[in-house]
Length: 557
Ligand code: VG1
Ligand code: CO
Image 1 (tube, protein in one colour):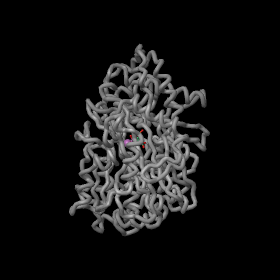
Image 2 (cartoon, rainbow, N blue to C red):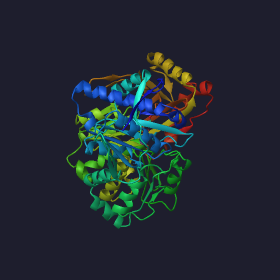
Image 3 (cartoon, helix red, strand yellow):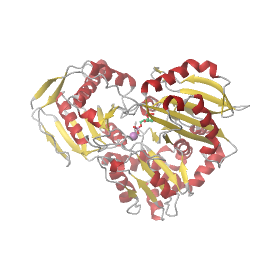
Image 4 (tube, protein in one colour):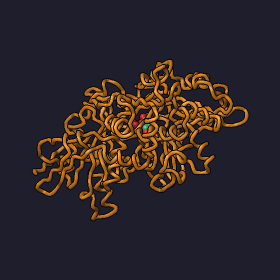
């Protein structure tokens, strides 16, 4: 195998965001761009391994590669294989057809004790030649690279002068096979479903779930033409016996059929409308581009992600065999609804609050501090792997429904009666002039102390800060993670407004404003009714119209 040393010029925009590096596909396709980033990752990983052990087995351990099937996926996989071979990796494992969900990648990395893996995905961002592409590196525990490593990758990328690449033709990734090269290195094309499906069978009581479907229970799962289609078809229809046709849009397409594979009220509107129609199934669900997010909707009952997290935490010990010994603790990202904290308090276990992004949960799970984690962005998962897991969440809900023998709506209402209700909304202002958006946040930061006592939506600000996270396991501090305004009525703190800028977009800035109000008495209002005044006052206070010319948010979830 001939190895080429290619001289290159460094790029200065390869800093990974909340979940890997995301750019316009064409940006990724420009000469040397993908190669430079991949080489920077490989250098950073090598440096990290050598710092721990000069004789590290890094190159003898498997390296896993797969993606969500979007445009440029297979071409990028071929490039990464060639760089990995040239850099000395001896066991490269690529999912068949390049299709591997983020939770499946995490599963495979753990099951094979791999050194790590590349996941080619921009997750919920749209795909296609004119849309988005992304790369994320997961480390040996199957979790996203943490800030120390991603910052190092960025540093290396800014000074990169060359990369190594094997000069060989592209590979056929369509059939399961193993190929050995003259230097002894192996390339294995593996079935991307097996390890994941096996793991789900170990965690859940599949006999109970089969009986549920056997008794006439109905499901509609929308794979949104993204990566979970083959997994969902296999698990729900083939193994559990859901009626054929229960899984829709199950063929992964390079452009996701022109949609955004983002399972929320806007992009999964059709599924939600269906669940509010006479045709509704007992459960409706969807997942995103790379299969780590989930949407749960019952008949006439959209389940807010924060409620879903809290409800799973509330019931998982009783309803899911693998959690029968109880939970170690729970964790949520800071902007996520605080409903799950109430469950933790009741269960007498710890609850943790982390910055946005799944990478912050890994240390907690590795240190056995928490069992379940979640984010307001439709992400839920547990310590079975180190990525969030869309199908796992759906299987949790199926287990709860099978055990409780109640409708989704009744389970949600029972939860509110027991714990009260956290009314919640996220408002996204997209495609903003980045400098102006940054300025808005910077101005707010300087004003924080003077905001105490200010009125918004008939409530007053009791406390105002910029969230800083102190990782209890490794002691690191991550600051500037979002401005929080805590609200109180005359007696107690009842809610929050949080705002921060997105770290996953590819054009301009996206401002996310998260609203949350807790209510113990009014359980049957809509979030709009409860949050309306607060939203109006916040828009005025932040001068969003003057600054960005927008009357209201582009997306409300
Ligand atoms: C968003 C979500 C965050 C999630 C991240 C990756 O990040 O808010 O909760 O972890 O996407 O999700 P941001 O920085 O844009 O707010 V995924 O499904 O892209 O891997
Ligand atoms: Co995702």
